Structure formats: C-alpha cells, structure tokens
Amino acid sequence: MTATKLPELEALERIIELGAGWLHARVVCEVSVPGQGNYPVYVITLGNPAREAPAVGYFGGVHGLERIGAEVVIAYLHSLVMRLQWDSTLHRQLENLRLVFMPIVNPGGMALGTRANPGGVDLMRNAPVQATEAVPFLVGGQRFSAGLPWYRGPKDQSMEAENQAVCEVVNAELLSRDFSLSVDCHSGFGALDRLWFPYAHKRAPMVHLAEMQALKEIFVQSHSYHRYLIEPQSLQYLAHGDLWDYLHLQSCAQPGRIFLPLTLEMGSWLWVKKNPRQLFSRHGIFNPLIEHRQQRVLRQHQLLLDFLSRAACSHNLWLPTPATRAHHHAQALQDWY
Image (spheres, rainbow, N blue to C red):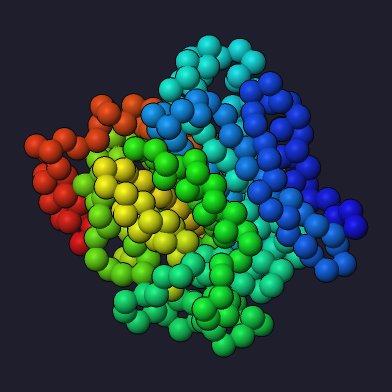
C-alpha cells in the first residue's frame, strides 16, 4: 500500500533530489501504519566519510506530535544544499567533516499525530537504561499500558525498529570516530528553549562533563545573546529508557573517543502564551500554528545547528587539554551540580 504522504517527508525527499550530487540518502527502515501504508526512515549523509573526520548528527521527529523538531532539521539540511551550489567555504569545511541527518525518526507517529510510534511506544523511554532514582509518575516512563503516554514497551524485548535504526546510524557514523556531536530536536517543555545533555537516568555528572562545559563556553563566548538554557536533563527530571543516555554510555566503552549528545527542547509554552487557542489543539501544544511564528522558529535555531558543525570541525582548538580538563570539570560542577 502506498503511504499517505506527510508534508515533512515530501519536503525531505525534494531536498534529497536537489542535493543528489552531494548527498547520499538511504532508507534504514520502514514503519507500517495500519490503513495508511509504509513510511521510510531516511538517513542522509554528506561530507568526508573517513573515520579520521569528526561528525555531527542531526535528529528530529522522534515524537510524532512534535513536527517542528523535524522541520528545524529539514530547514537546516535545505540551507546546506542551497549553499553547496555557491559556498566554497562550506565545501572546504565538508572536506574535514561528516554530517548525518535523520530528520524524521518516527514517521508513523507523525502520520498518526501521536507522541509514540504506531505501537504506542515512546521512543525516548524505550532504550535499555533504568533510572537509578525515583522518576516522575508516568512522565519518567511506564509499562502499565500502551494506551497511556510515555509507554516504555514490553520488558526484556528489543528496542523498537526506529530506535534500532538510530542506534545503527549512530554507531556507524558517530561512535566510530574520535570526536562526534549530535543534536535531537524536540518541543513542548516549558517557556524557555533548553539544550539538555546526559544524564536523564541519574543525577551524577556525565563522563565527558569537562568537554561539555568547554562546548558551552565557546558557544556563549561566540553568541552573547543566545536564547538557550544549557543544562543536564537531570536538573529537570529523571527518566527511564533515554536513548541518548544509552548511546553515550556505549561511547564511553570506547576509550579515547568523545561523543557529546544534545537535546534541543523548544519551549512551546511561548507559542501557546501568544496564541492561547492552541491549547484546544493537541498539535498546537507542541508546534507554532501561525505561519510567521513557525518561520521565526525555523530561523532561530539555524545558528545553533551551524555552530555545532563548526565546533566539531574545529574541536582540536577548544577541547580541554590534560592540563585544563580539571578546571573545566570544576567549573561545570559549580555551574550545574
């Protein structure tokens, strides 16, 4: 059966066609939606495939309701494809950098208008990671029923196909390198735009806390008037099954390699505050419904996504050295813990 087209998926496929000379696209899995057909999950790569090159991964659409996350990633990919037609500095950057895109991780949930995938599983509660302390009721992940939100999936079963696809891509394209970054774009938490980093399953600092503090430092120095609250997710709440915790823990098993995963949580309460009628729409709680606000959001976050590519490409210039690492770690503890 031919799937009912999603606007975001159609936009992504047009970009793949436009960038055919520079991009490589493949379908890592297909998601079946009863009565609607099968939807592809694409991974798009560009830049230097050599393992010596650093890499950045851009992910979106993990929660089907949060379409703006997918749209932010797609807008950035579109910008890169347009720039590749004239921007020689971008071509030189890509000679030393690998970029990886999975803009629509959960097309089935997007087609159904649900947070979870078609099986009712919340992909951000589905990884085999158990919180070490109490989590908020339901919100932190539950196994009572797929009919309730934040369902983790059955115990002792493999991760959902969408998460397995993400893990395959991250292991092949990011964790195989000495240095990599990622950003996963979401919406719906609070009235501020937040950049979260691990951990979600415990309050203890992550292994690469000094490196995360150094990344924050160069971002703040370069963008004095940025709009983000940068913090570990554990300052807000703990959760079971966080996919990025799981992948970061996997990266830590490879000595000498650094993987810094970020989660962008766009503060959707701002959009509701400006347009209270959005409260009466499930879609409106998580996305800007007025066109000019949507366009503003798409513009606002391009600076961050582009910064990450530049930071990865130049990581040797800002990563802590053995002599400065203790200072960065102490500063991070003071800032966040």
